[in-house]
Length: 122
Image 1 (cartoon, rainbow, N blue to C red):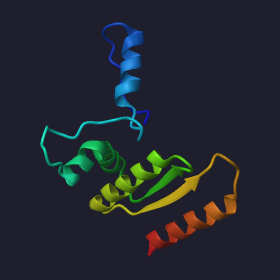
Image 2 (cartoon, helix red, strand yellow):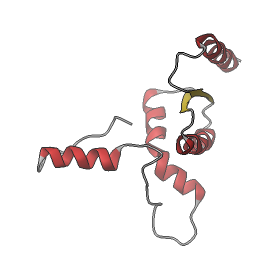
Image 3 (cartoon, one colour):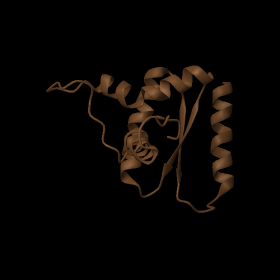
Image 4 (cartoon, helix red, strand yellow):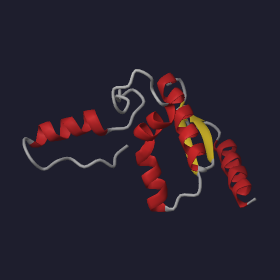
């Protein structure tokens, strides 16, 4: 989400504003599908929306992903479903944890992450 580059040309405040409005990858940010086809291609749409994740996964040698969802944010939850499909397409296992901004029960999270790690060790 915070890995974009702000252009150094033009008005710096406008450049920063444009970068925040256009480059932050958030489920509430609308993105056009690639091309102007009448019928959308789900696989191309996934690549268009989440290709940057594939680049991170390849560049950093990622073996698995822990997805943190924000409880009560429906658009975030819906978006994560598509991210999971994209990760599955890449063959990357993922664990989904829902978060509600409270301390909650850290032991439960610790147990789930621990079980995920054991599963990866196989």
